Length: 205
Length: 194
Image (cartoon, rainbow over all chains, first blue to last red; front, top):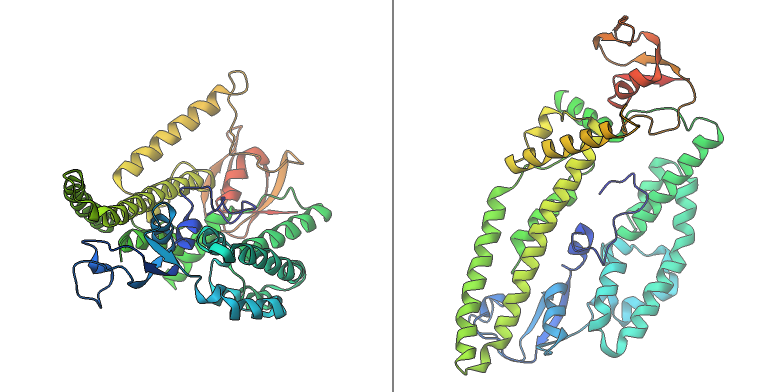
């Protein structure tokens, strides 16, 4: 989670990645194709001990994937932010959308949904790529050209992946400027210490 | 929902940013472990029934197994990410951590930290053909042997190589050898002025 390394530690392949754990926790609407005995507590409204076949539940993505993978215990639908209506919004003008409201881990979650999407998987895949392509230009533009305060209104609309791109752009631009003005060698307070001192100061005052 | 407690641990880490470390959450960890024991025992019972010939339990077993794996992943990620953070702190704060952070570290982590310190020190001593090399120094290529610095805090007496003593008082400026004052700059006691 060191924000000063250029990229966040890798998402998907990393077992320990915090971002990946958070992304796989988003809900997916599922329907049980087979009855599951003894786990009725997952659906408090049913009040029974078991889950009957045909029960509809929203399960976290990690559980949905595990249940879908081999025996097709559940069948899955795409969450509504990845469905036709929202897809149309993204197709119309992706760069204006508040993607963080769609899902804070839009792209990562989307990738985890691919194996669950069935026939819609190719459409979903294209959607993810196209959305990022549409939005990237303005992300890069603001990260290189705007002041801190102006940028914050922009970053609230970005998903986590885009935010890390944004930070990377900013940091590189800053380093480049220091280098051009021959100030790159100046030793500064280490960022962690600075943060720490700031917090201590605000606690005292 | 299953795995909820474990996720809280992860969220806790996610919320605290650079240079911060939340208190080691022993209670939540214990609760997650309890949840895992319950899941495991139930699975064993159902698996025994399955072996005895009753096949309808399969879905439930599969579901609980997925939850067990998820809990395990969250716990391991919690411990691992904490260690990574403590490791990063060694390079930023130096070998002694600020008291506020030490208060949030649990005993095994303290041991790990001191062992990491020892390993790092032993490695740095072994470099440079017997003279040793401080890897935490010169993270940026130095241009001069001496630099001009301004004090940001009252620090007191500071000894430089030849036994000379400078008094570092707030808002005074000094001309000091880079190799000596670098770590004070990193700690935010001095400021490098150019």
